[in-house]
Image: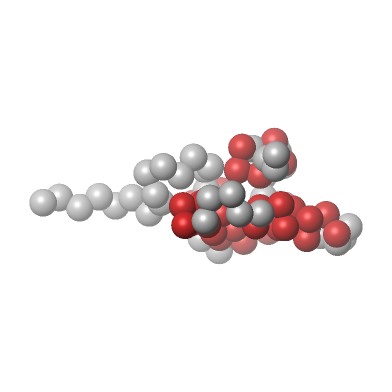
Length: 78
């Protein structure tokens, strides 16, 4: 049986920035994905965004967040 070299879940819809695991953004996206599988309806995403917003000197770009991260479906909070 052939094995695939896929590093990310097939249903993961957010592109990993440069596929570099060292970016915090990639880790947060994976955590969000896993939490949505095991605990649908959790508010973890809202808490992460609130944490980023509560520190005005935070630079999301230095953590690997793309410039348009707030408009990506993964970071939308309803």
